Length: 341
Image (spheres, rainbow, N blue to C red):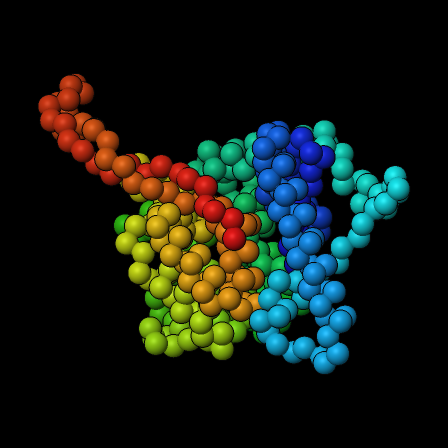
């Protein structure tokens, strides 16, 4: 079982929590704003109606429908309606403890903030002992070597996905590398993961980034597996949209990178809003089950933010004591909410 996403609301609060396979909170968001909760309920009702309409059509149609376009919305979704004051099932009722969720969410935020602020002060022993260390959070489910660091106790210790884990293990043992938040070979690695020599990266047949890629594509997901620009996966229309979005956007901010006056604390790249808008339109025009799945994952869950650029007046030259000698304009990034898919 992989990561789990739960979205809960009582009409006043909206809680979105991502759990690890072990049931530990990896990231979360607690919103005490009625408008967000109402928008969530509005979307849920719209999707419920669409699912019921599709199911009614399927039951009325005599012939079996294998058309990919027909099943683009709800191919593997279960709805359960509670009527006449029926209570929630016990296993689900325990989810709706908003006070507990709020506390756990804020504790997780403090934990992540602490790790980022003290990344240069923590030693390796402290990271190993930490039950929820930054390294463990980025190990891919089903593996022990694919991600930031490794969880294996010995060299022969592999996860369930053994083939992928072997590739990651070989890559992790590259002798020429720079550890997370370490300086080596005259270069400081500010990323939360180790960077390796290019030869080691090229030897990897399937790295951890491919585990975060949509099956049947070479450009949709974290990184890309294509060896040349013209190479596409089986879902060509969707893959073209992802390729243009990845390579043609002129303005972007990498994960854990500061650019245009804005620090991107996420592990994924932050794009200019125009690039995301073009990507969204491209996926809508493709209008297949895969393109719609990519759109919902990207815009509704992963990349809910984008940025715009505005010129702001700043000091471009200062004296030794800090007096501004010359002023000019620079592009400043401002975060915006992406339109939901």
